[in-house]
Length: 193
Image 1 (tube, rainbow, N blue to C red):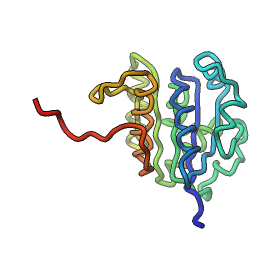
Image 2 (cartoon, rainbow, N blue to C red):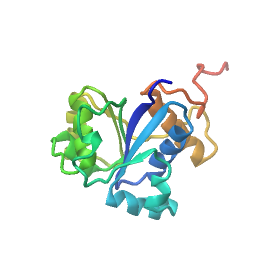
Image 3 (cartoon, rainbow, N blue to C red):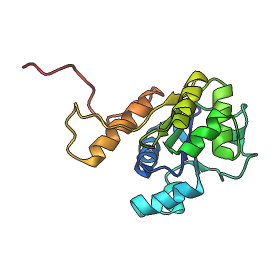
């Protein structure tokens, strides 16, 4: 049996904890995927505030859990094989840490490793409106090979619920890793008028 594809997932303190939780739920049900999770302290606060979940609830959705302060964890090394990393949601603090290579915690270090190894890094940045520092940090990460993916809903599929909007966004993000899913219908072109 082939080794599973490993995906690193981080949940930080921006609003939108639902994206990280739904991502973990979908990946947990996807054969051949192994998730490695980190949740920042502010991420835990948002999980409680937005979803009435605690750290243990969300950690139970992952295959492997890493402490954000464990800078010596396996995912802090380029020798750790992974498909890449998704930060869902990504706070402006985490964005800035990644953009400037601070590696001040395991989330930023793992992102730095993913970039240096030329693997896929997706940051689901959540803030509005953006100030110039946010925009410059997003540009910097993009220039380094990262993908900035603000979780903006699409309406062309006419979603009826928040869950459908979340699934559409999560589906588009995992598309970036060529992972099959049935979260949302594929676009087949405009309807005939």
